[in-house]
Image (tube, rainbow, N blue to C red; front, side, top):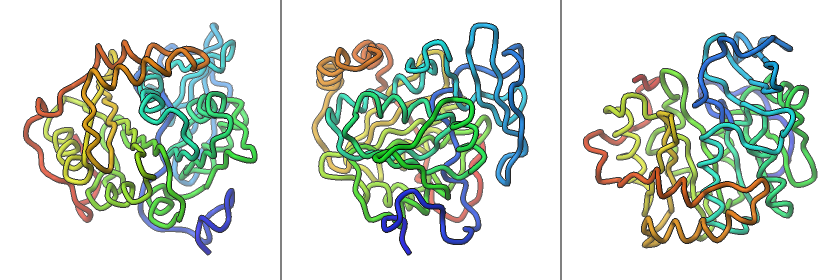
Length: 306
């Protein structure tokens, strides 16, 4: 049975390998857990030794996979509709590229802040979410207010396997493939990116959160891999972070920085809460040609470190 035939179900059996579907929805750029309030939940799962939810005195709630580690999700429980994490705000530039997406895929649920933002602002869209860890899904539902509905479903299993087997095509595919020290090769290679490209609809875009720690060879190799697969790539730096947002098109669309600013400027006022997307592009745009070196990443070489 393929994923596409059974929306909302768990995987048949258990896949070996892969780390796809981990990741968050906007917290990795906001620091570690130290001093971030009391623990309101702590558990573990097959994929994470610790799943921790903390809340501080201001009502800021965080999902973490270890103490003093980058948060996977940050949510203001007084204003849960607001995107707190800088990465999750910048990646919404994608909504200026595809203004009225009909179908979206999010790889990595975290606490669910990003899918919930997408649901509020794109109420008619179908949103699929691939999340590796059922424990993360439980935490998102129990402590961050995430809810599935008729058009927003979580598929529990490996994100790469989902993309390789699903029959649907998506207007926007969101990828969150970074960790504090490394990233899973399964979500970084040319072979994976080719599978992602194959799931894009005509005119669709891949919006990826890429960890650029040290801005060294690893990040340059990620850029070279995207260039080898996609027809056009744009990079936006996340403020006060080592994250970069990659916007990748299957074919070249001839979009310049000015053109991207114009597109996002036309949509930012319709988003609720409003996001300063035009400013984020203007201040954070990185010319791809400025990233030197690196080599195309391929399957079969294990975890990618710094």
